[in-house]
Length: 316
Image 1 (spheres, rainbow, N blue to C red):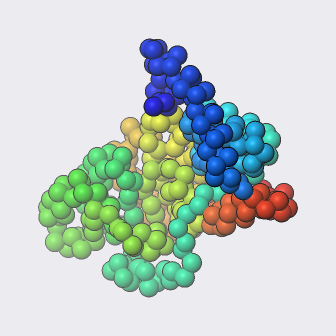
Image 2 (tube, rainbow, N blue to C red; image 1 turned 180 degrees about the horizontal axis):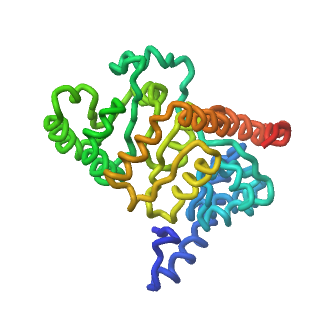
Image 3 (cartoon, helix red, strand yellow; image 1 turned 45 degrees about the vertical axis):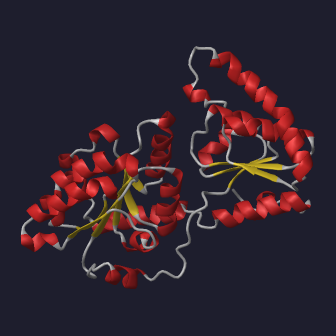
């Protein structure tokens, strides 16, 4: 097994891992010879390097997709050998000076979702402002702590849909039970939404979430203002994603350590300004690329068939 470059320490594996990686190149060559693909698609990472090198040696076109503003070291290296590189964010083009184009991030479809109907299904009244809070397992403790500590203040101006995760539901239900009865129906905690996440995003007036590539892409595609709290680890990729969206005027970046109940209450009060949120939503929409999956698929098919590349015919 070959480990990630980020986790390799100064031990025997520092020597063994490059040898293992080199040994996998002939295996990749043999595999491609047996399968004979017309094209190869990869999302990068250390272990993709032998495959891309083998594909290049066999003259098989490769398409690399990078979802974050700042690519990792391994992905940067792979980009030198890939035929084409698709990126989610315009600043990432600088990391791949040869053969890169902006595709955006493939996301779920929001077509055909009626905002008024979606809000009604969630019990949101036309004059309500809906705050949607989610962030996956990495956000449960931080987000729940800040949110639950500010619930009474927040609920005076917002209806809240909180995806608390399975582990956070106990605290969320207890916090709801402590609320004044007049506020309880304005706070809806759920462990997660399986089939209704697209409707929840379309219904939201403001989102509090992490800043992964998919989250940023969906917020932009929907056109909704957001408070982004980047996950502080994994090479600070999320911080760069959030900073780019903030730079477009579409989001407010809050460092993880600064997401407190007081900070959230103050920021949510500022963002009750409908005109400010409308400007942020419009900026998010301008940054969105809801057709990213189609762009990537069209590029890959063109590479596989030898047709003209769509990325060379459309502006980035």
